[in-house]
Image (cartoon, rainbow, N blue to C red):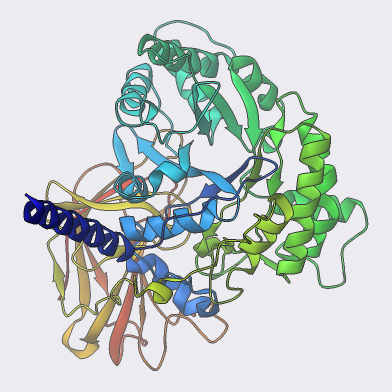
Length: 554
């Protein structure tokens, strides 16, 4: 009996040690610190593939995250993000979330989050980035999207609520209002401005209550840019407002106060202007009809995306960021503000980030923590990086260089990647490459080539159809456009401006029908050498929907 007891004890001890060994062979458990004011951070899940990181690496390589050019849907990566956030006072992420008539994109982070081990430490909630074409919102679709929220998010313990109500932020409340007014008009009913939104939010509210929840707390994004409609949105059901950033407001306020320096322009100004103007902005917007939670700006530099005309907030430093954090805590406590929002902590492509990186390490996160949190008796949790515990790296593989000269798009994009400011989505549907245009300029997609010999090819043939969205019909001749680069003449010059050296265009017919086009290349004096990169734009028309059946060089 004694030997059996010893044996059982040994087995038990071995299992405990094994469990400890397994547990230690991972990221150390988060040690949350308590913030004096609730902190929420905007999170942009914009790096679903290496192509998005590639533009950052080309233009601003010094800001590389400490997680590397990481796979954003990797649950282990998300566990590091959770650990770092809660150990610096952030208790929730407001995540950009995309839905257009049932089609989702950039949802990889949310899917990874629900697989992360540490998700119980950090809440999340939706910022519906409804940059959708006219007609995309309807009664049927609102029922559908609300059911999706209820079934997948609202009843999970990780979803952020206030007073038991799931929180939903909406980027463009006017889009919903516009479409619901149009839907009513089609049925012979007249709704006035604001009443469409009110009907839509009431519809969501009823569904959520019918599901056994107390309702929804609606937040209007960027209300100060919406003028009178901000009040209409409040009357329709929005309780608070939230700002995504503080760029244009900072410059206009600084200009009106005579604070501009000799080198400050609307496209390039000092972060110091934000330090000097943000507090009064918080005061004005908190006292607005729909109170706006104070926003801590994280700067701006969208060179990785807007390479032709970037907007840059320069001279951002941890010291200046710290000043704003200290002011934000004081303002929130004096005015009984329930929440302070940090503008995107990881929108690397637009230069608004504080997530630990090679530029400043943890200094921005530490400034936030030092301003808002009380130091534990045992000291702050140590700022660990993956290499400290033998984890990582998490970098995506480098972009492949394609050897193709023909693309059939049977199952995947075959090496083509979206250019984020040109295409909201690039995905294969029904044997065709499906592209949704989100801007009226820039290129939609690009590909790196292993070396395309221009002597072998005289033209690019494309079979595609282009469908304009209602209200965004072409007002003149539309063209498709191909830009190419060679080692001798790259697409970008040393100042990261698009050179326009190798360019060919051809008029196209955006009528929703299939057409074959032959884009002549050999007639260009610049179609020479070996091409190593291609940028392609089927059309520069806002909200156009493009289907490409095939492309081939001939």
